[in-house]
Each structure stands twice: as structure tokens, then as C-alpha cells.
Image 1 (cartoon, one colour):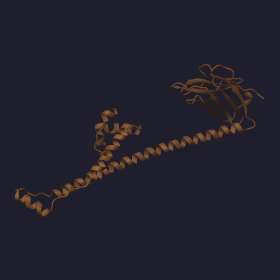
Image 2 (cartoon, rainbow, N blue to C red):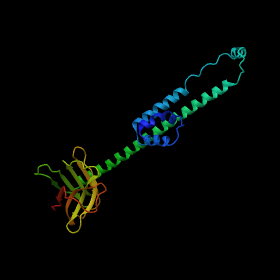
Image 3 (tube, rainbow, N blue to C red):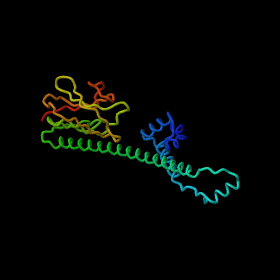
Image 4 (cartoon, rainbow, N blue to C red):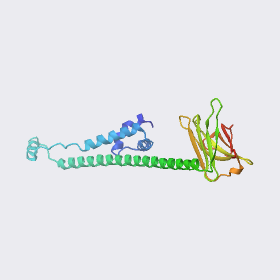
Length: 247
């Protein structure tokens, strides 16, 4: 269901009275971060809380009420307590629904913050490993793309103990469903996959493949465009080829 079909059910959802399949549909929209449904449910819960918390109507004095009812020949019934219990129940339900929404929102925000923190930690680790390769005296490097019209440009750094680092510019983001894949091409044998990566919107990219590297048997490094899952062997013409020159 879309948001327009669900909007008439926000109030019942806020009170915990909506039935299936609308209940599951709204929860699915909320879990996916649907802004329309989140705003609609939030407004419905706030309204329920306001209604539940509204000041109760004041009853007339009991003696006056009995006199008026008796004069009209109306049998008195104990309705006052029933009304109070109904109001209390409505207030409790609205309050519980609103607190439930706040709890759900807090859990969603906490999950998002934890995910962002993990991403930041992973990026810090990646940069630390990259700087370790750059600053190692045994690291070798080679440039690529110089002197050509509009090629990817950059440099590859490799270290026998720490791995390979590629830094590129003018490398457009891979199309949907595709990723760039780096290869270590040995002097003898088949190319070895060295991980997939995506460039940024501005065409820059940094890819790191950590671990030991057999420098003596490495003939070159290459980058191809592959399916998003990567490939065991190159399936397209290399976009970048960097000979692993020895010095």
C-alpha cells in the first residue's frame, strides 16, 4: 500500500486499534524511514495524547442534578464513574501509544547513530592503514594516466607486508549494478582479485587491499569494471594498468 492509502489509518494505529493488513503496512513504512508515514503517525499520536489529556468536563452539583432529573421523571443511573473510567482509559491508551512511538523513534535513531559510528570507525581504520603504506620506506609506487586525453589518473602504492593502495581521480562513478575491481597480475599465472570499490561523485577514489604481497612475482596492477558482486577473473577491458616496476 502507498502512503495515500494508509493515511486514513494513522489515528487507529496511534491508538493501537488498526487491523491487518494496514498495521503491518504502516510498520513497514516506518521501518523504511518513510517521511510521510512518520509525520502522519507522529501527528496522530500527538493528537491522541492531547485529546486524552484534555481537561474533563465538570459535572453540576450532585444535589442539583438529582433535583432536575427527578423533576423530569428521569431515572438516575451511576454514569459519572463510568465516564471517568472511560476518560482515564482513553488517556492511558493515548499516553501508552505516544510513549510507544517515542520508544520506537529512539530505537530507530540509536540504530542509525550506531551504524554511522561503525562506518566512521571503519573509515578511520582504512585511512590509518593507507597512511602506514604511504609512510613505509619499503613501499614502491607508480603513476598512471599521465599524457592521455581524459583517462583516470593517479598512483598505486604497494608494500610486501602491508598490501596495495590505489588513489585515483577522473574516474566516474560506476553505473548501477557495477563496481570497479582491482587485480594483482602475477608474472606467471592468472590475475588475483584485490577487492571491489566505487568512486565518489567527484571522480576520486581510494581503494586499499591489505595483506602480504609477493612483490617478486607481481607484474602489474589493473582495474576493470565488473558486476556489483565482483568476478573471479576480469570480464572487461582494463581501465587502469600499472606495471609493478622494480627499483
